Image 1 (cartoon, rainbow, N blue to C red):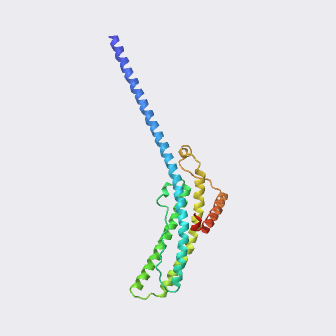
Image 2 (image 1 turned 90 degrees about the horizontal axis):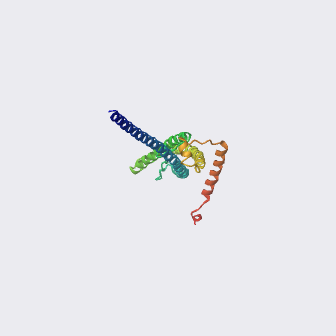
Image 3 (image 1 turned 90 degrees about the vertical axis):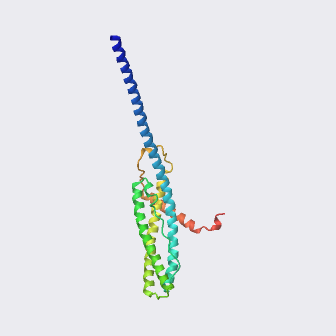
Length: 234
């Protein structure tokens, strides 16, 4: 009788130990899985942040080119408007950062980019308005209706204002490009497994001297690009 009770007690104790061991193993595997998942996601987020810096660099460089195109086209259009003539030229809209803005992992940089995008959206609205006005003037000509000179002068004034505002945005684009490049420089050599995992945001302390030095380098780069001709490629 005593042997039977001891056997049952030993059997239950063994089952509990097996259960406890299995539970501990499953808990450890679950916790390890969560840690691995968190590390993987942080690493992926850091890589996404670095890629977004490259995207921002390309977009800002493209915008600098587009501003130059807007100025050249606008000047030709203004010449026609001064003579009370319409023009077949139209202004292309600027590209915005909306498609990858949330991929940036720096709150400070995101705020700068957001404000920049709002200004680009405002510029695009004015570009659309000018294009629409030109279409309406063209329709009047096609229908044989007279166009009052005041319409040309009003559009001319609007385009002059557009050139001034886009010049300010061009300067903003260059400064934002400098800050973006400094961010790229400070993160390029960072390990995604260490720096990327330890941090959740990747802010950078950028001094005024760094910004001015970067701006000067960009100005020199733009000047060199303007000198290059297709024959310089090969």
